[in-house]
Every structure is written in structure tokens, then in C-alpha cells.
Length: 307
Image 1 (cartoon, rainbow, N blue to C red):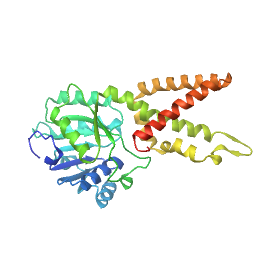
Image 2: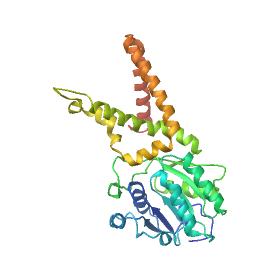
Image 3: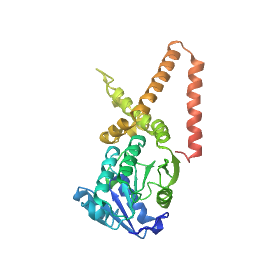
Image 4: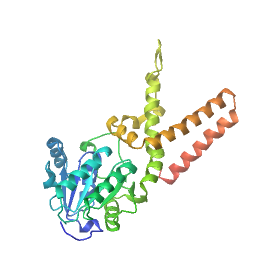
């Protein structure tokens, strides 16, 4: 580790990934695939999972000891459930004490406002600029979990959001931009509050709707059969993401509850409006709403290569 102000990943000698699951494991694999010359350290509490990560070449070395994981490292990528990130930062602060070596911290969590505020308060109380933090959120993932589902191409062409505040260290920000660019991502700067609003609508709300749709259909049955027995491609497409980790998504919804609650109100309003159109046989307006959605989806697919 150096005392220098790193701004480019290629100058980094050691990266510690704390939590080598799907995202952390994919980051380790992507670093290797794209030619990272430094050492990739896997840090966690479950030695069996860490050994799996090393066997899959997601990391070079593994440890369950925080002090060892921080030794000589330049960058720590925090990959726990989002509610645990501030606790992880607090443990790092306690571990490094007053030593002056600079370690850049970042995370991969799906919510930002509450977490970033808490972490910045911790770092200000610590009274040093040697642990700069940049909130991060790569917009990539899978309904699968664990390092066995990790893949080196996960971040290619994925938007990787970085949250910037008045307290964000500019050199640390450049370094984290370089990190995601190195593994094929597209960095995008937002405030924590704007992140939570936009991602609440683009990611959190769709997961909630997929889960509610799944549960609703699962409860529709007659003596002649269950609705679930008649689902096909459309249902699978609409509900695939509901297979994600309940623990993970409970944390996300709790952390972004105000935004998600407001979006639920919007959905209820839109559904109520559509119900009224049905009851009034307003075919023209129903078709207009469906056409509007169709145009939006087709435009999105065209702009993003069929996605």
C-alpha cells in the first residue's frame, strides 16, 4: 500500500473484496479477465465460501481476519447486504485506528441515501481523510446468488452508479470510476437521493410488482386447477426477478421505504384508473395506454440492443 493519491486502477497493488458472493466474485473474475496485475484479496467470515471463491479464481488469497485483509491494501470493495455496509465501515475505522495509510472504500449496495449519510458521519467523527468513501452501485446482477453464479462479464456495458456528495474525495471518485471502467462498466454520477428515486422506480418497484404478481397468481385456483399450472412465457418473463434473495430485497425495501411507498401510491393510482376504464368500456383509452407502453418498450429495446 502507498500513501499516494490513487486515481487509476492500474496503479493499485492490492484490492480487498469484502464479501465474495455474486457481485464480489464477479468483480474478482472481471479484474483477472481484464488484466489486473495486483493482488485480489477475498475477505469474509465463512472460510468454506472463501475457499470456493479461490478455487473459482475469483480471488488470489483469502482471509477471515479483518486486519490481515486490510494489510497493504489500497482499495476495499464492500459487498454485504446494504444495511450492513455502515457496520463494515465502522469495523474498518476501528481496525486501522489512527494510522495514516490511505485506503479507498466503496460499496455495491442498491440503496444510497441513508447509508451514505451514516458512513460520512462516521468518517467525519473519525477525523481523517485517509479512508475516503465513494458510494457505488453496479446495475448488474442475477436472481442467482453466491460466488458459484459469478461471471467475469457481469459488468460489461452495465451502468455503474457512483454517488457524489459535497464530502466526496475527488481522487477517490476518479479511482472508483476507473475500477468500473476497467471491468467494462459505464460510470454514472448521481447524488444519493437521486439514485434512490431513479433506482427505486427502475429496479426496486419492478421487483416488488413481480413478487406481488407471483403471490396473486399463486392464490388463484378452483376445483379444476391452479392458475400457476397454466402460466407460460409471459408469466415467466414478468416474474423472473421474484426469485431473488428475500433477505437482500427486504433490506433494500427497508432502506428505500419512502421512495418505494410513494411509487406504490403511483401504481395504485394507475391501476385504479385502468380499472375505471375497464368498467366504463373505454376501449380507446385502454388501447392508448397499452400502445404507449408498447412504444416505450420497443424504443428501450432498440436503444439497448434488444434488452
